[in-house]
Image (cartoon, rainbow, N blue to C red; front, side):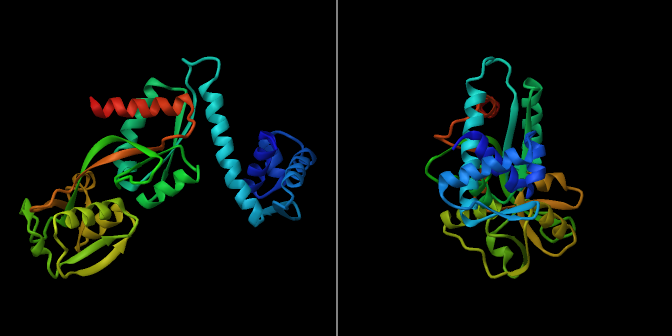
Length: 296
């Protein structure tokens, strides 16, 4: 087994075609087929089901694909880390982020970083907070940014921004002229909830639990999958919803941010990365940059 064989498997799996995979890798289709065949012989199993000029992964192929992704990622990191010119940082950093940091933190952070390192580009995948950890674990991203507390063993975090969860209400709602309300005032309100993987919703649930408080009886008018969807629904008077203060401020012409008495909903938005993973110098440079920026 070698890097070229793993690259061949990854290319066929991603393109679904031997022809397109060969074009991507700049090689002949017979040459690519031979690499796949050698890999299958080494593993003693079929990795791809051939269908005309196309192909799909078998069960063994899907498992081997995950191995290929991890191995190629680590190999790229080694090449980047021990390259001949440590001062000329270049490469691609893949970041998976939940919706709040993706919209309000990453643009400024990446802009400042790439001004210092123009040879580095950043790709951002937006997912809910629960998916951030899974994406990192599957090596589909190098770094993650989320507002959900990181409790998994083997991961480290760097705070990159401060945030607060607030209750967003429309500007003509009866709460709009109040800076804060008690939790009991939410009784019988129409509340727009977030899906279970939301870091914003988990922050609320954990803070209430720590304070020995429960949400009173209320009506769930909708359950939505993003901050922007909650804000839009609030603006349409469908209900009230808990969102990031960053989001509430950015839509202040339509919504008002209200705090809950006796409950601290402040949180850090954190950069998350695998502690023991081999990283390229360009990725480590981003971690160091984020750390310095927040401390300053």
